Amino acid sequence: MSRIGKKVIAIPEKTEASVASGIFTVKGPLGTLEKKFKPEIEVIISEKEITLVPTKITLETKALWGTYASHVGNMLLGVTTPFVKKLIVEGIGYKSEVKGSNLVMALGFSHPVTVPIPQGLKVTAEKNVITVTGMDKEEVGGFVAKVRALKKPEPYKGKGIRYEGEVVKRKQGKKTA
View (cartoon, helix red, strand yellow):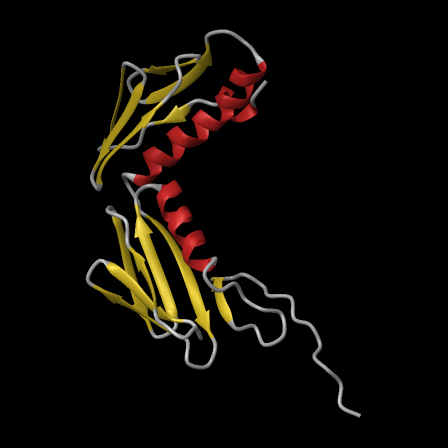
């Protein structure tokens, strides 16, 4: 049984939640989020709280129960306060800037790397810090992971793109005689 799925989820003020034909919708001060849920998990909305109940108990519904509860909680949180992730670009000659709806970076390759910014995300690049803000936690995390994968931090000098607060385990280089 899911511990997270059993918990009752409180609906914050100025936020509305509704379910129609398997699509869960949340409206808040920052916007609207929608997600399609399978019918095996029933979403029950009372005045100021949401509970999720599996219609039949199978291995799949046990797995989805807690996952859907986390999605609902993240959606409610996202429409009231945006999710923020920061990336640090480290290395000589490594730069990043936002041009229109693209993130353009110089990462030591022979050409600049251009990444299109998805709708609903706000990206800023100041000095060596890229800040990604949005109300959908999955979208923010996915975009940040995609950008980080372009040049992961290497263990010798630490050059590359890393998350804020990420510790890069450093290795000792060659020893001189």
